Amino acid sequence: MTSTERLGPYALQAWARGFHVFPVEPYEKTPHTLYPGQPYTLRWSEAATNELDRVTEYWKRWPNANIGIACKPSSLLVVDCDMPKRAYQLRGSRYAELHDRLGPLVDGTDVFRHICESLGQDWAESTRTYRVCTGSMGCHYYYSWPDTMRPPRAPEPSQASIVKGLVDVRSGGGERGGYVLGNGSVTTKGPYWAENDRPIRVAPPWLVALCRDGVEPFRAAPAVPFRRPGRTGNLSGLVATVEGATRGNRNQALLWAARSACADGTPVEHAIGALSGAYTAVGGDGGARQAEQTIRSAYRLQGRKA
Image (cartoon, rainbow, N blue to C red; front, top):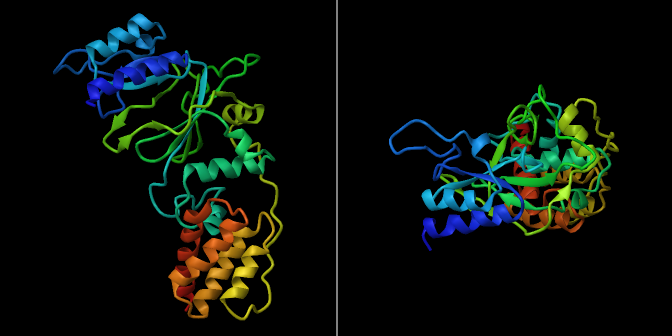
């Protein structure tokens, strides 16, 4: 199926969800050029529509256009969780300790989950909503504004960062609001595709407050300090340490166990096989991917110490 046959139906799917859409340049994130060879582009805030005739006209005229979704007229709040641009990106921020727990590469979803759980919220329930995976393998979490609350207005920014570079917001702020690319769009980094077909849940009050007020008023509950166990004797003892770690200490336990394994001369791949399995078995945050990152990070740290 060609791009011209593919994008039209996706635009109609967005229309059917009630989204206000407009055409975006193929493989890009900028509004579509009005005339070939000209620099002038659509005024996307005026072009965005949920009228079927106009949507059909747009993709008949530009059949390979990406799908822009205007959040303000669509009454959407989209949390945009991105992939890290570099190792230890959170150093110097209030979330730097996540590197100790999760390793050098912490993505936006990791941070969003941390914020959610630090506010005492259930992560699985809070993110039970329509989601779209982005071309860079990030994730867009879609929410609708509660009927009892008006979307934020100027001077609040339409694309305020909860955590700059990793967790952004597209909503109804400012004069025009922000926009995101919809399911079926394709950029040079890859395709956008819906991870599920769930209804869009109403944004919970804690998320609305977070987007309006930022993260400064919120403080994470202090974690129970991790207490290093006595000598474990061998790799199986380190596995037992990870398996027995309490919630909030599992990442610290994994990091300590991996450093101990390194100090004992255990090959890193053996440690990954044993400790990663223990970590995921007890529900460690981030699963096997984050476990491996943490173990490799621990080996690098221990190697420097040696």
